[in-house]
Image (cartoon, rainbow, N blue to C red; front, side, top):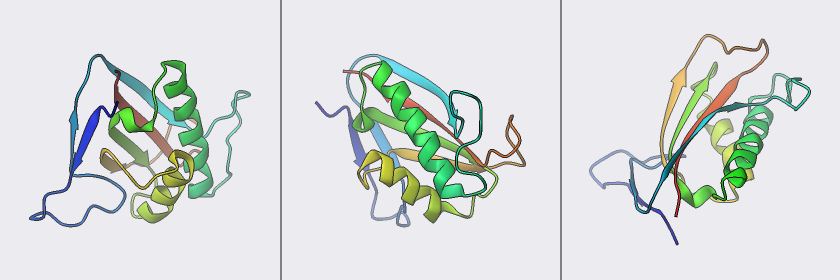
Length: 131
């Protein structure tokens, strides 16, 4: 069962890598904390490559989704914090590589000066509607 409807009104600009509106359907809501490109040993994955770090953060987000029995089509909102907000094409490519789709929920990319661990370039959090 799909728990979201993605809407992009014609009167708004095209939405590259996100949807303007995501309407949630279903039951409970889960909030997944920001996931970063950290391995279990706390080492940074992907070096200074934003796309590689995006892939690693998305893989960590996928682990969190799987832990609650959820999938990408249940993500209704995504917030991305990054030191390189204008590099949204690299971010989008990394996201699509992991989620296997070009269907994106409502999303905001926020430019920041740094993250909690030196060397991290991106953090991705999500809101999920569970069936």
